Length: 138
View (cartoon, rainbow, N blue to C red):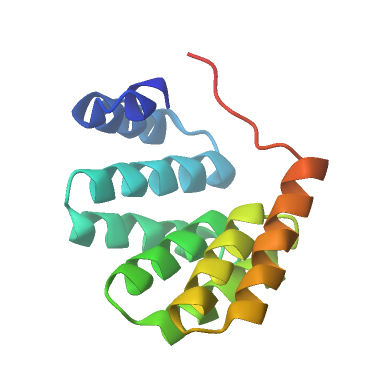
């Protein structure tokens, strides 16, 4: 994550590929595929990202980070209502996944649904206050 956060996406890609090769279980494989998918997005390789997010969901169809990332691809392409479906699925899978609420709020804002947007953005903030996101150390 340190390489990704520093904008060294090619280096991050190599590290996530190594993590995937060394993964010892489905949870590790899902996490590595999801992070590698995010890295592919940063590198402009959306098809590869889509493949990784879907591969993670084959291992667990309720893996909230991959559901959110698929929603993000849809949102970027202007398919707001479809993105909302993925964000809602992520929330059903993990009601404490703040990113899903935040992105759902953003999607509702794009539709001009201010009240819904504010509700979901506030929910994201409440969740993060109770459960601060974990960061990987360099």
